[in-house]
Length: 472
Image (cartoon, rainbow, N blue to C red):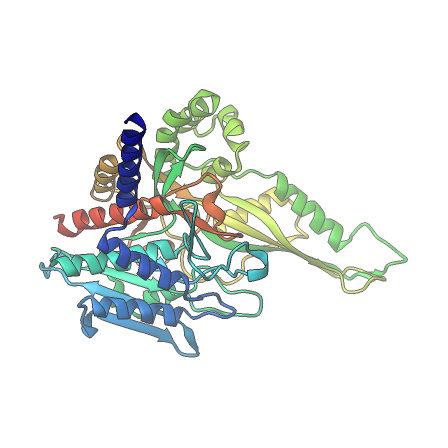
């Protein structure tokens, strides 16, 4: 009898587990949308963002969106780099919209290097695998799915909700150009994306080694990328008669000085809030250093402790690093020219010219010229993270992950958010998607995302955007 009862209990347990794992109808629809987007190749080499955008537009239209609410766009000469702007109208004509931004292009992926086909959505061991499963088709699919859910349930927001799917965030490649759709919209169709503020990728939750959520990050600022050239020229000559004035040696000394130069710590709202809140989680010597640096940005001891971590180091200051090198013109001649390229990530509020002057002072050699190539876009000023943006995030996050702190931070890299911010639409990053500590292979091999994390991120965005959409 005990064996019989145990067998029944086991059967019921398995049935309950199977029922718990059975996706709801709306989740089934989301999975299909997500699968279609991931399996639409949008690489620069062989893909089409235009096709991905058209497929998402078709899904929105099938859900009841009108042609007037959907705008597909391309730029002349770049027919594969198109995008989509979709609008769920608001009921208050005076209320400014919310912009939901995501890019649909992905980094290249070679089948021979991957364990699985990178352009097939594969679910395995609690993960979705495939190129773009995380960056950034997860967010793009969630935004489209959210609009569909709202339209199907008859939700009429007070303010319009706009979704912009764009191409080109991942950049081009050597010898190739790709349209950056976010920049194109900012330059050519500002009316389509006009909004009070925007939400984008660039942030999410952190999981510990056991898969437990420990922090929910909000991108409140990001650095701007600028290049600088260091160049030395001289008359050169025959290599059999070397002289001290050698262009390559002068450049090498200049680059060595740059490698040892540290830009000063610069705190803005985003990194100050990050270190303030993160200190309570990290604790110990590192946590104490975070508290100390917030109290005194000139605290060298605290700076040294934090800067031992490359991520914290990059969040504290502007950074410049040598990335390209060229010099000389013949193996048997003294070099007439030597040139190095610096990749600089500039903290908001600091100008490119100020960075150039600091590099000149650090190099301290009048024979080395420091120039900046023409750059598109201005450097965005530091953004505030107002309560009207942060408070709803904290409210929904606490309901879904009780006790997990929400932490604003500054992204050392850059996303398309800056292109919106530069034209007056402050854009922040938040997703509700919690990731493994290794980042899930984003931009690398076998990119993956936890199925549970994706579904939680979907629910988080659904709840959050509703709060924003009806807020006054």
